[in-house]
Amino acid sequence: MVHGVEVEILEGAEAIGPTGDVVVASPDLDHVDRIIVSGRRIPVLPLSTIQVLLDATGNRERAAMVAKVLGRRCQGARFDSVWSRRTGQDITVSEIAAAAFVTVRAVLRSTGKWTSPRWPTCAKSGSPAHTRNSWPPTLAARPSPPWHNRRGFPSPRRFAARYRETLRRPAEPDLNYT
Amino acid sequence: MLVAVTGSAPAWLRALGELPIVRGGRWAVGGSASLALHGLPVDPRDLDLLVDHLAAAELVDGLRGAVVSDEARWDRGDVRAVRRSLAWSTASRSKSWRAQRL
Image 1: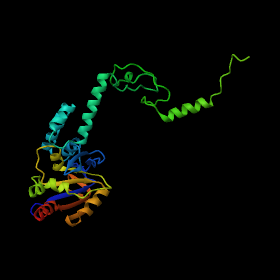
Image 2 (image 1 turned 90 degrees about the vertical axis):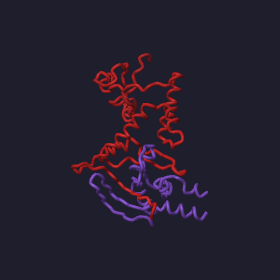
Image 3 (image 1 turned 180 degrees about the vertical axis):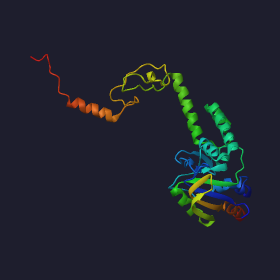
Image 4 (image 1 turned 120 degrees about the vertical axis):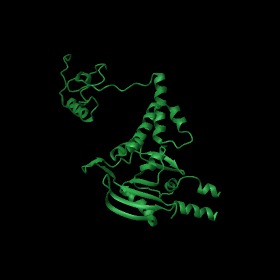
């Protein structure tokens, strides 16, 4: 065959270090970019994953090239720049998702409907997490409810335990009863 | 018509477009082809596919006639795999053949 292309199919491929240890495990094939080729959505490893693999296999030149592209993409993460830069080419699904997210966030921020998530508080001590040398230090103190876990997030197990405890507790006597 | 069929796309890209359809497993393009698909200026000479067990079976089955080697426990020193199959894509030949028929 004159114009044949070698197709290498690797199952469970992992990068090995000089000592024989696994440096990079098999890439997660659930998180891939989709690029349309000949009308087919072809799964392609994301650039961040490729960069890790290139670094691990000692391909510094290409890793640097990927890092440069990734850096450029992070800088211009606005919808218009992503769209115009790739116009005429195939656009990855993750790029479209990122652009959509940034646009929706910008709209919600402008209408005042976007609120940043609160920093969790330490449920065990009842004090906010920032008093334990965590970041950021300027968030308002907010005591956690008893059904939150140590990280400050709602815990179904704790909530159920609390509910059971409430059921077991005897009713308080009605002092107004005559 | 003839030009439209053969096109100017590189052979690896045509081969990619003609890979067997994988229904059950998960797979992804890796190596230099993935860089090229992301728009980086590289010239891939082959096609590296990273697959899981199901996808490996489907791809090897789909490329049946083109598979030249199929080995378990492959180790190159810096990369190793549970299974490694090597195939020569027939995409270019079948395309040009179809073009001649048209």
